[in-house]
Amino acid sequence: MSKLSERLLKFNSGLLPDMVQLKYKLMSENAFRFFRGTCHLFYEDLSKVRKFPIAPPTWICGDLHLENFGSFKGNNRMVYFDLNDFDEAILAPLSWEVSRALTSIFVAFNTLKIKPAEAKKAAKFFLEIYSEILTGGKAYYIDPRTATGIVKSFMKAVKKRKEYDLIQHLCDTKASNLKIIIDNKMHFKVDKTLKAELKQLISAWIKNSREWPNNYIVKDVAFRVAGTGSVGLRRYMFLLQSRKDKKKFEVVEMKQTRSSSLAPYVSIKQPKWKSEAVRLIFIKQKMQNISPALLSAINFQGETYVFQEMQPAADKINFELIEENYNELERVIKDMAMLTASSQIRSSGIHGSSITDELVAFGIQKDWQEALLNYAMNYSNQVTDDYNQFLSDYNNGEFSISDNKKPGRDIKSE
Image (cartoon, rainbow, N blue to C red; front, side, top):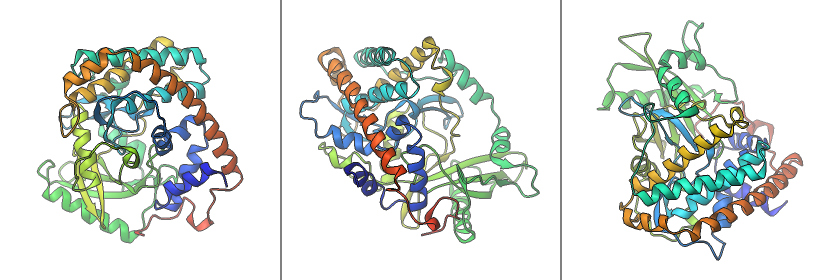
């Protein structure tokens, strides 16, 4: 067994074995999917680099890549486009966040077979916009009024989408008793005992919540798979129906939390969190302009979960659709760079993060930019090598388990 496989198996031990099998399958699709599923490898390798630009500590989402920007409805019911995955969020040098974002550009563009020269151009443009926003010291945000290009079209579509449109996509509307469609790809069946416990949990949350009108009932529950890196954690989605208006539905989710995979490699002192869910929510609220509706922490069977209105997997930019339109690619890269810098400015001076003046001073400097660009470009080659090694090991059965632990069986309370 290769050292790479040992690292992967060790990191994913403790997660749901059947879902980890699905995670490995997703990671085998291409190098970018592999990159998205191996955040821990990136930072383990980065922590060993001796000469890496010293940068101010900021709050970072930790796993910043092109797929971790998306659109969602905030708690004010407006639609926003922003960073949207904070599982790995932590206080760390800002250069760590930027280097992962840059690496994702090189890996993603290579996966899409976009010329290396275009990837380097896009990465340099990201750095240019990022440092420009950081130097300005002002945080910006994107909603349908401020969006441009494909992001604007994308957000308009999300804004116009009605709850029932989502329900028709997720559920079997022809059935007498509305239920979530179980496809054993993104939605998996939950066994009866666990489903009853989850229904009771969310029903109690609705009853006691100050943010939610007490007129919804839980119609159905399913296990949900989304993304790549978090596959293996427990994640449940709930179909809610209004008691007063039978045509009004909501879909919410709760996702298990665990410590950030960056934690072993960050030497900066961290706040003492009551739970990992509290950590995630605190940082999410500080970095995002407006956070998703219903964002809160829930305890269930000794584990902490983040609860919020569900964001459909489709509410992300599909780069395959714009790969040949460089003007659109450039606009998206610009937006993502602006949002990255803005999230750090917005959360500056809080619980150990650098004040805005320090971020401005760093943004003015130029020496770190070339160093991060070169690191990202070189590390993207390492990602390709690691992916090829993983694919070989995967095809040779290094990651296989017994049939009774493969995806497709009912999720139980284990």
